[in-house]
Length: 208
Image (tube, rainbow, N blue to C red; front, side):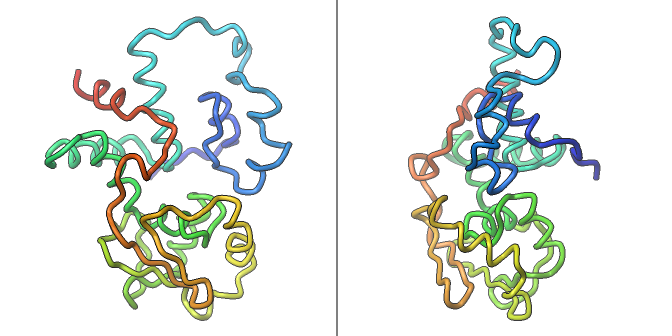
């Protein structure tokens, strides 16, 4: 499946906000958004006001890039959320948050979702004691994610866990650093997710 392989800093600049795609660099003064807070390209500084469709498109792209999904995957999650009871936008974000690669990032076992996806692919994690190497695996309440014992000395995992206090742990998760284990305690509310996005614009985009 094709994925974006160019500079991810351009994606943050295009959305004019930090999407935290680069790990430690996003927290330093080298962050591209801090240095050039305008879209990339020849006409980046002279872009006009966006239309309603443009606003919806940008919000859709922002969330998609944040979680590192291709359009087909992204739209599939939206269709699932649309069939569920409750607020479609909130259900959509919860589905994205339940992905294993996102959980690995949230627990602080990786510095970015892209790095988390690679680590999951390489069999470095257990879910409830069983190896799972599918980044899109959806966790359920009570599931435990553990770093494989032989992978606990990998430098990138150790570095990510040391940097974890800077990001903070979401209230719906629980982390046991000594055991390299995280628990998905409960499904988060929209307020707890604290994401700087307007998911209603995505709902409007796909409802046309």
